Structure formats: C-alpha cells, structure tokens
Amino acid sequence: MKSIGHYCDIIRRRIGKWILSKQSLARFISRHCLKWYLALYYENWLGKRMHFRNPRDLNQALIKLSWLNSRNPKMQQIIPICVDKYAVREYIASKGYGDTLNELYGVYDKVEDIDFEALPIQFAMKMNNASGRNYICLDKTQCNWEEIKTKFSKWLQDRDFGWWTGEWQYANIKPQIVIEKYLKDLGDMSLIDYKAQVFHGKVVDFFVCYNRDNEVHEDGNSGSVCYDCYDTQWNRTEDITASWHPQRQMVPAPKQLKRMIQMAEDCCKVFPYCRFDVYEINGKIVFGEMTFTPHGNVMNYYTDEYLVRMKDLLI
Image (cartoon, rainbow, N blue to C red):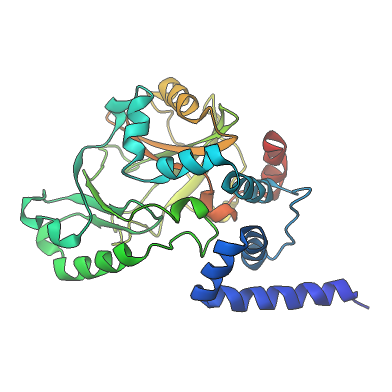
C-alpha cells in the first residue's frame, strides 16, 4: 500500500504542472517566492523531490546556489552583467581577453533602428537578455525580414524572461538586440562549442557540443547536435548519456586548450560555479557566453553518477 506522502507528491506535482502552464501566474510566483518556485520547476521537469537543505546532485546544488546568489548583493550586481550578451563584452575585456570577442555589427533598442541592407550576407542576431532567442542568417537574400522584425519586436517587450524558468539573473536586464558575425569553421565537424565547467575558479571538465548539421534552424538549434564530455587533459569520459551523442566522434583537443582553461578561470574565479563557453575558429579563441544556470539547472544529459559526483565540488 502506498504512503500518504506518495499521494501528496503526486498532488504537488500536478499543482506545479498547472501553475507552470499559466505563465503569468508562474512568473508572479517566481518573482515573489523564488525558492518555492525553483523547487516546483525542478520537480516538474525531472520528477524528483527537491532538497534545499541537503542537495542530492549537481542540479539540486545549482538550484540552491541560484537561490543563494539571488540574495547575495555582490552576485545580484555582477551575475546579470555576465549573462547580458552585450554587457559581458566589457567584463571579458576588463579581464584582459578583449581579443576573444566576436565582431560586433551593432546593438539596438528597437528593430526599426537596424539597417538590414548594411548587414553582411550572413550574421547572428540574438537577444541580450535571454537564452534561445536567436536568429541565424545564412543568406539574407532568403530572409523574411518582416517576420524577423515581428519576432524580435515581441521579444523586446518581454522584460520578464527568466522568471518563468526561475532564472532571476535575466529578469532585470534591459532587452536589446545584438548582431554579431556569424561564426563558422573550416573543419570536418562544423563549429565546436567548448563549455568549460568552472567550480570555485577551477576548470573541472568541458561539456562539448559538435556535429551540428547543415540545416541550421532559425532559432539557432540543430537536430543532430551531439554532446560529449572531456577532462582538462582532453580524455573523453563516459559522463553523457548515450542518447545525447547519437553520432559520437572523437573531438580533437583545441589548439588553444591551455589558454581556454586560463581564460575561464580568470573570468570565473569570483563565482562558486559558472559554465564558460568559447569557440576556436582557425586556432583563435572566440568568447561565447557565461551561464550560471545551465539548461535551467535541469540537466538531463549527464549520467546520474556524474551529477552526484560533481555535487560534492560545489557543496
């Protein structure tokens, strides 16, 4: 016979799912009771009980850290700068790595300010205050500019991005459009995204995304992308579940691996945790972004063993 606690968990999750389906309500609760909302969000996505007092794995430890950061005046000031895709450029330059910044075509408060004709044939267009709000243009002669303007105009009006996912750091950033050079490499594996995981100022490993197919979607995502994990000596580990690397290949060590590690540690040493993303284009490091809540802190691509093991580095 199942316990009362079991049925209480079911009721709580059903209530949580209903709340998450009502974005206005979800954002209100997140804004005014973040700790409770983070637990609700986690349990809805992964179907597990959240434990703030004694986190069971890395996801739970990062959720607790996010809540603590939201109450820390120093972190309240610096983290929103680091996740702002425009403001972070000054932060990276201040650390001595201005040479790694991607070429910037412009930053805009309004879509109407963009001179579409002046843009190159290829470019990357993204919101500065959000994750996943991108447009990758491979040939502007084929772009539906009116449709793009409508989409970005709507995003510019959304000043609450982050509250629905409990990612407070995005919530108070002034929305802007950032247009940069489209990155591409000449190698056989297309563009490789090196994501350094930095715990207390030390790079522990790299989460690597590769094998993006030629059909780059308008939202910047690709259906065949593979995930893998490498340690700092560039030995491949078995920490990613098999379903997330369907076309697994050996990723060669980046030529600038040592500088990547040094850069990540220099830029992240004041944080208990940060994921620091870079690319390597023809032997040159190009900065990507800084992330404090990877995958919304519901990372389902790592093995359970990895998540439990890495939790101990944070707590």
